[in-house]
Amino acid sequence: MGCFTFVKLMMVLFNLLICLGGLTLLAMGIWVTVDGSSFLQLLGPFSSQNMQFVNVGFFCIAIGILLVLLGLLGCCGAHKESKCLLLTFFSIILIIFIAEVAAGVVALAYSSFAEGILKAWATPTLQNDYGQEPVVTKIWNTTMTELRCCGFTNYTDFLGSNFEEENGGSLPPSCCWTNNAPCSPGEAERSAVQGCFGHILEVLKTHANIVGGVAAGIGVVEIAAMIVSMYLYCRLDKRVS
Image 1 (tube, rainbow, N blue to C red):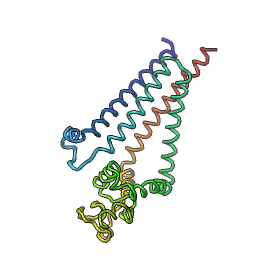
Image 2 (cartoon, rainbow, N blue to C red):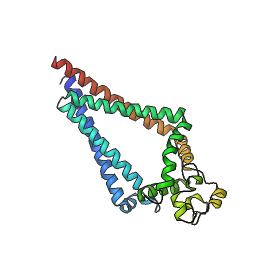
Image 3 (cartoon, rainbow, N blue to C red):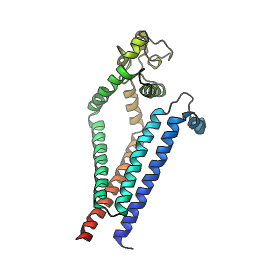
Image 4 (cartoon, rainbow, N blue to C red):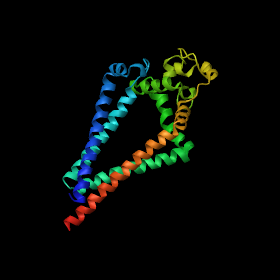
């Protein structure tokens, strides 16, 4: 077996594994979204009766679809020896890799800038969609309940929102230490519940080694995929010529 054939075979097998992983995530995401209660029962002692998995389900579905499409693209490109598919596969991996590196640099070196970008998205969502859109409301309720936080920055994100107006000036229960409705702005101010962005940063700092290790592992896999796909692409050029 020649080097080209071996690399081609490894490329196909590697992308088949990516497809299987994507299908697994996709199936799990659909299951969690459609029937979260049975998923909770499967987790047994590791589950919480108050935990909602709609955000995890949608995330798994999105990542699963992306992995399936990426795996099929890589498999077809290697099996059919298609320069176009291999180049497309390489380009997508490169874009994902650059985006991950850029996000990491911004998060580490410009945390205040990253916070500003996220706040520009989160604040209008809390002001206009929380309490109106079921999915948005469920995601934020899950986040605030599990992390014991309130809003993105703090309770002020809900002041003047549609939710406050429709509930007679009350804020979400998570914004008060009593965690019971009604939660008035005054009680929320006295409770001084931290915003969710601060909690997420603390969690990331606490598990920095794990997060860094996972990120490094993903980066190595992506670099390897780009090297293999470009090797096949270049060898196809030589074979054609």
